[in-house]
Length: 222
Image (cartoon, rainbow, N blue to C red; front, side, top):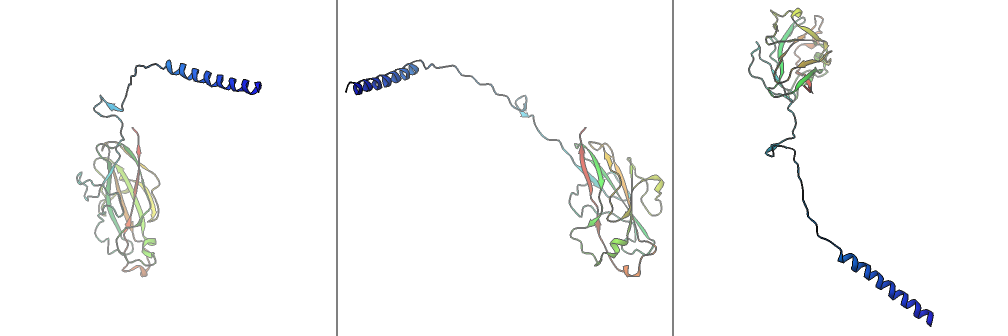
């Protein structure tokens, strides 16, 4: 009996001691001053201070070349190349010529440009059921930098004025990239030459194709 009473007394004492500790802790909780400092990614707290750069390459298919009418054609079939006369009536040995120029826009980063192999133009109906005309056409592409391009016409074309970057077929890509300066700082000219070979088969008569080429560009930091 005495032992049970002693245990009860110890429990009461422990609970009382715990209550005392809680009470003491609560009695010493103090208020404090607060302050905050903020910073922002802005310029003088008025305009955004974080953003992205601009990158855009434009094309010009004028023939003869004129430094106007630059356009942005990012999807197949893109801008129309203006081939020389006879493009739809080729006979064996005929070649047709078409120029195009590229440059960056006025607020763009610099660029590296790679001409890809041709693919079928989107949304254009052709007549080449087994791909025979596509396979037969020879393709040469030349390039030159400068404000004024060399001639890209049957009468005046001179390969010595250009640098060849593609000699092959429609599926072939250029062998070297070209650089475009930032902010319209340079113009790169191209001359496409398509030829129906001298030994073209008679079965190619009356066929049509519409190749489309992509100039794949990547930005270059200044």
